[in-house]
Amino acid sequence: MKFNWIIGKDFDDNFKRYCVDLEYQLRPKITKFLMARLEHECGGDFSCFHFDVDLITNNIRISP
Image 1 (tube, rainbow, N blue to C red):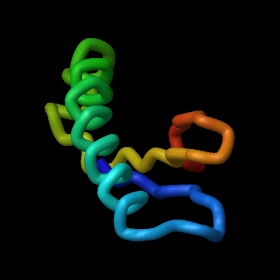
Image 2: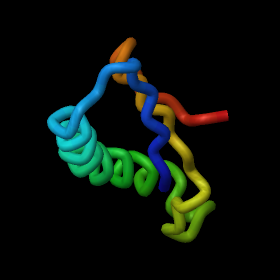
Image 3: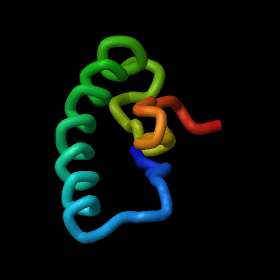
Image 4: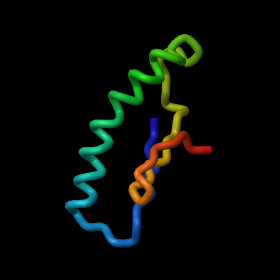
């Protein structure tokens, strides 16, 4: 599973740390969601999933 971060132009080390913390919060929730719905189809391998995390609009979506 990969996260593509969509952020504004201004970011610093504190913002990078925020992104890391947010990813650690999101990863288990997304994994549980995928396991409940797609575990049999993917065999537990969700490495093909890419997510766009848009911190400007506060949205998370599956990347095309």
